[in-house]
Image 1 (cartoon, rainbow, N blue to C red):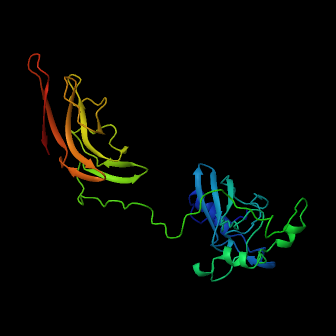
Image 2 (image 1 turned 45 degrees about the vertical axis):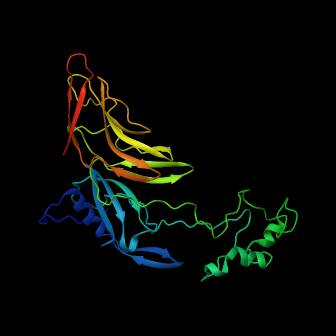
Image 3 (image 1 turned 90 degrees about the vertical axis):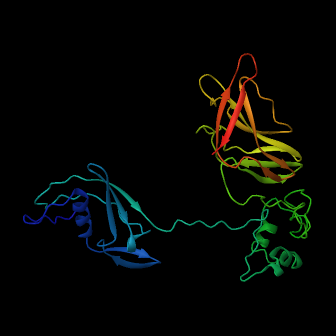
Length: 297
């Protein structure tokens, strides 16, 4: 550590003091591209503090990515030693990694400016795989028998080839409702004889159904979409089992659960009934089943 202390110079924070010290280090010779290059520390180091007395020194700009020597302390000749530094040293630079494409035990050569009309696989196949860079090594390697163009090349899977004109099957319906509002039912996807739906976040009496973020998958067909509102004195709706669901019919109300139809769905088409969050109330008289009333907000 080079001494730069001056009796009349202002005292900075520890990290600034360390940064001034590092920036005073003269040029150091590095090997860059096989050639010696002398680079100074000034303007090429940054210092940040982690905890009191512990600092990160980052080599940047011209020093980024270079193998700078490990920083050590040298107190010889220091006329004023005020600070004690514990330094964690890092190098910054390009850390991009490139992995070449591998086909079995061989590597196909990349062809510049290749386009779809000249598929590299077909080009190599037509050339009897002569464009494989390491063809000779494959033929000569220990334990390898057969010709590279036949026994040496095998299909990776037994999957059935999909024709290039495959259209993906049936069309997917566009959403029938463009605007977004609470309790809006949304068609997500269709496939394999089933449909998936989601619902926009909404609330009843300022309480949000517990499974509001979940999607529901049902066999393709016509269904009711409803919300179950449990009652557990004195809470309505009670948070336990307060959820939205899809079924062929909406369940009947009971003393403990009230249901409201919010939409119907049929083969991906959504018909919305409720168009906003709700305010609800429960009324029970005598032994009669409780009645549930809902108002849109």
